[in-house]
Image (cartoon, rainbow, N blue to C red; front, side, top):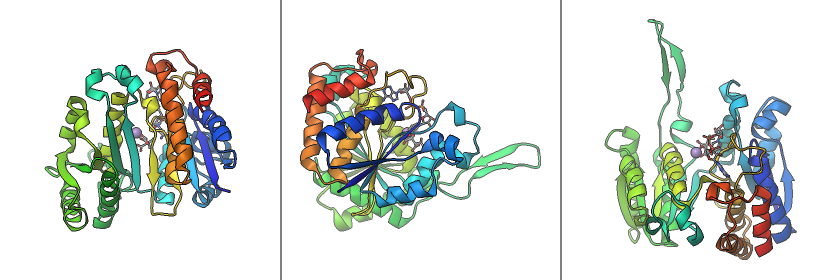
Length: 350
Ligand code: NAD
Ligand code: IPM
Ligand code: MN
């Protein structure tokens, strides 16, 4: 029996994960769901956001699905013990180097976007964000005291050839199954690591993927093009930091941050880490206002990419689409359904 490790975490994480549980019980009753403490909740109970045994349990499961981590109550915890550090450590330990972040606009939600419906109707972008390297992990980093009494904060942006190649391969493979186009976004005009990124992607393309259309784009221009004419994009491959920012911007094209799932995958055969791209939303936590669809669609991605149940994934995607077609809307989408009622709407379609 396949196992899914659920890590509800903080804020709205437990609320949206509860809906995933209900959907899984109805759709895949044979799936064994385990649950473990994580993030700020784990820090409060165990003094660390990620226990070693939870990390090992994650690596040993078939897929991991997390809700969200973080919140103002942990802002003063030491950096290495903050909920976000637990998330970064889990990504690193699982070596899930490619984060697939689809920005897909359900037809029923074209009017919910902050852009004009004709700009987003039919939108289907796949971000491939490098997830275990770059400035998120580069050394050295820190804050040091200067002789003149100032402080100096520093981080290191760093990529190696193989780190760029492996995420590039995922992007090109992905494009072959879609509209066959990759945009590679970097800042090669100012950054050394960006220049290497561009060179490595160029060579990889020429060597292994000449059939795929490749365009290089500066990350700032990419941000502008995403709100000007988003439908020009198919696959966008980019580094950890740019991918974080560009995918949040793309979320609004689809109607709400509460709609966007993600799949972090590594080498074949290893478990994937599935997470909605939104955070713990402290402003609405505990009120039943969170949209659970990003989490439910993350489960859909887990069924597809790790659990090898494409029929169940198709059924779930169709149920979400039907629920939206029938007018199901949480508050972020301009409606009044609670988290649980949105779960009910999906279950009714299933
Ligand atoms: P956020 O994504 O939590 O919230 C941004 C805004 O979007 C808020 O107004 C929130 O109410 C809204 N929102 C988010 N998800 C929603 C949903 N499912 N339904 C309806 N509305 C939703 O970002 P933030 O406020 O910048 O960060 C809060 C905390 O979450 C921080 O501690 C941050 O580090 C953390 N965070 C965690 C993750 C993660 O666990 N993967 C991702 C992003 C941020
Ligand atoms: C995300 C989040 C995380 C990131 C934080 C919470 C560490 O913003 O998953 O998009 O920056 O990767
Ligand atoms: Mn983010």
